[in-house]
Amino acid sequence: MSAELKTRFHVDISKCIGCERCVNVCTGMVLKMSDGMPVMQSFEKFGWSGCWRCQHCIAVCPEGAISIFGKKTSDLPPKPDNIIAEQLERLVSYRRSCRRYLMKNVAPSIIDRIMDAMQQAPTGGNAQQVEYTVIDDMNRLEEIWDIAYARMEENAKRGYYSSGFSSRLYQTMKRSENSLRKDDMLFCGAPHLFVAHQKASGKWASDAIADCNIATAYFELLCNAHGLGTVIMSYAASVLQDVPQARAMLGIPEDHYMNLIVGFGYPEIPYARGVKKDRFSKIHRWSKR
Image (tube, rainbow, N blue to C red; front, side):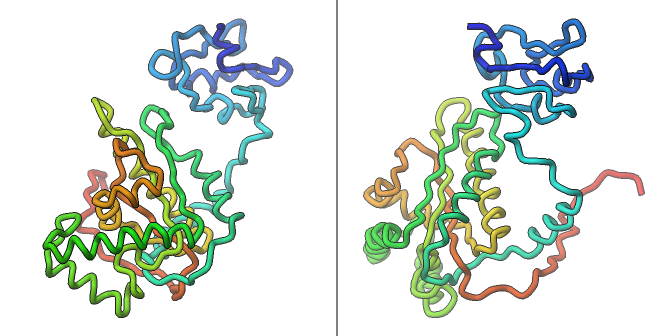
């Protein structure tokens, strides 16, 4: 099968101006200029030996002359206005970890928009192997919580604590249920869960871990952009690792990396403003001033 058929790469010769931008951003280096027009060279397979499916070529074309994988420029999101820089800075400064939520399901339309955007989260080598599990129904989450929470308490009575917790740390978390965590030290009372997970084995295991953590960060920011509260939880992930039945209810294979969980929902207590942390001593710059 030719490269053009594999990728459905097509150039509208009536629009192409021969600027070579698509060739210069092609991560697989499979595009070249021929008679003033970009063409797709043959390649063995997607990835290191050919096209990375990154779609840089269609994204960079100033005239909208390129289509690939059945997508046209009219199918793609437009470039944001410059003002987005200020908005993103404010979002990063404003977002907080939320541990008290309203007991109501988030509107499906909001979750749909977030998950649609999550398809664009970057991955190592553009492998796109990360899977997303979303518990977007409170009743389903309650079923998982009942099993995981009961086992967590049983283990604590035997002196076993997930995630290397000690008795002191566990009891501190238990006390937080009286105020901060609203009767739920496990999921912080969140009505929904998001888990990025991927098979992590062999020489690419570290890539899988990084990809999942990147996806977690992207999801958390997207939720906050839609006015939702979020909390990133490693303890909850450890508890689920210790309760195979609960993990199975999430549908996450045993050989998949799963070290962070995002609880999310409508916040019970909205924040009026962001904060300013003093961390400049942790910033190392080598620029001349």
